[in-house]
Image (cartoon, helix red, strand yellow):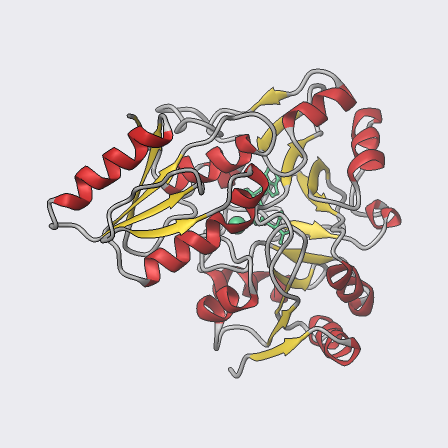
Amino acid sequence: MKTVLAKVDEQAIRSAGEIIRQGGLVAFPTETVYGLGANAFDEKAVLSIFAAKGRPADNPLIVHIADKSGFEGIVKEIPEKAQKLIDRFMPGPLTVILKKTDKVSLHVTAGLDTVAVRMPSNKDALALIRAAGVPIAAPSANRSGLPSPTRAQHVFSDMDGRIEMILDGGACTFGLESTVVDMSGDIPVLLRPGAVTLEQLKETVGEVILSGGVLSGLKEGEVARSPGLKHKHYAPKSARVVLLRGSDKAIAEHINRFAADNSHKVGAIVKNCVTSLDKNVKICYIGNEDLQYAQSVFDALRALDDLNVDIIFCQAVEEGGIGLAIMNRLLRSAGFALLDV
Ligand code: TXA
Ligand code: MG
């Protein structure tokens, strides 16, 4: 299959909408990461997403809608607390999980009786959903297990020849996937932290439980509330990832000690304030703010992997605000390897 890579314009959106209606796959930008979309009501198209990504069949997809009326017909009801989150954070980087109707295929939800719904704020994503005229089921547009794509080029390197079209809308604003909250029970459960923070969720609905698996591996025998929690994620193809927590100076010293013995090709993802790194270290500086870290962390993991480094040291951040989401992705990328230095 020939994959068309097109800059977003009216014509490209029209063709992309047509491809979705015909049962094809289109990758598109959102404010979080690039998605790999298919008509959510077309079972065959939905199944082809799993094939293109190499995604385990038990990991459900998010249904993307263009306006709030899109909830009608796909969820059974919107409880009061869920409505509050929808009113405050949609459109935006939030996904809510609610009881599904029969209209939503079990292929979308991987057999669950709940469905994840999100209304992105990215104008190109909204234009595509409107052009398609159907809700769009879309996971992140990476090959399963790899870091999520935040630029069209990342999608191209994972999906060339596997999907009909990639819409290039530039780099994503947030760079980490949406906050996923399970609103199908009495107390909301945060399954995946994102740019809508735990603090903001609590401000809006009161008590919110942080799911197991977000900052630590699932314990032996612990059941994943979200199938996504149990699968390998965000890991570069060959490099090993290790998180370092400590002062800027201690982090630099640890990395330099490791680089000094010359037996490993070493990469580092650090804030600009980590200075004096050895010249042999391949460094991705990610600015000094957590928001900048979020925007560029997946790009940095991919870039260092492309340089064939053996190990990537990443600077840990505080777990408040968007820092919780950064730590969740980094810890999972590292298989929970975290060193205090
Ligand atoms: O920002 C995002 O959410 C991006 C863009 C494209 O919208 N999408 C995305 O999709 O990250 P994906 O498939 O990579 O992640 C969806 C997550 C998975 O961890 C999945 O297990 C969880 O949401 N999920 C989906 N439906 C669920 C459900 N019914 N119950 C529990 N978890 C669910
Ligand atoms: Mg994903």
